Amino acid sequence: TPGLRREEVAQLAGLSVTWYTWLEQGREMSLSPAGMVRLATALRLDKAARAYLFKLAGRPDPEEDRRENGRLPASVSASVAAIRTPAYILDREWTAVCWNSEAEDLFTGWLDGEGPHNLLRYIFTDHAAVSLICDYEQRARRVVAEFRSACSTHLDDPSFKAFIAELRRASPLFAQFWDQRDVVEREGGERTFNHPRHGFLRYEQATFDVTGHPDFKLTLLVAV
Image 1: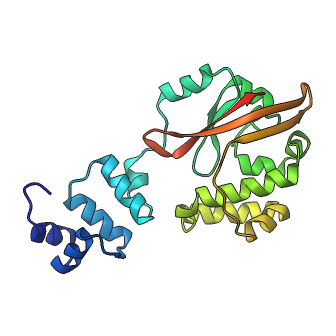
Image 2 (image 1 turned 90 degrees about the vertical axis):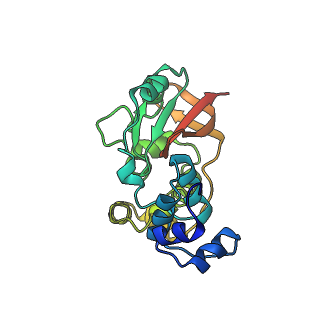
Image 3 (image 1 turned 180 degrees about the vertical axis):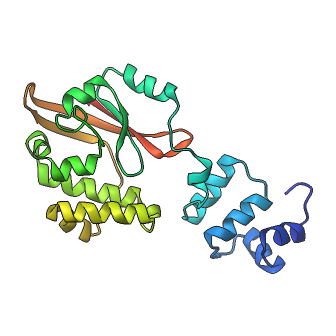
């Protein structure tokens, strides 16, 4: 760090000089999230560098929730509304925080009703989802595996534990899939639906990160 000697950085981060030297040398080390917070502060890392540090370590930033207010800028919601194909953004518990009219028309029982608009609750507790989604059980199993992968750094959060416990009580099928502990990345590919008004529909799905808001994901469905 410019202006600070190695010994000073180690002292500010609450680390031994030897330990910090090993870290600089790229040796395999294990550091607690709290220790990483002190190190990021001592190194005066900006937001991007701090996020990269925690990503390399495979650990969640314990101060992320305090540094992010969890709300998306109005410009993001406006951009989603302007998309002319079904589009929606999910938060880290996969509750839709914004969507366009095309998505509301497609997802009967989920985005066209009263909230909260949680995707997992919809898939596993609403009979409309069973009728709408083709290959329902296969898709539902994959959604659970995608969710487990996406929320892996938050599984110990009390709010997540309560959310999972609620879903397990509400849906034996969710409990069955969750206990299988499968993990896969949320990916694109074909999605098919039996819509009550529009009949059979086929889309290609794509999912994107929302820059500056790591807990949010944008999903688009393009008709094919």
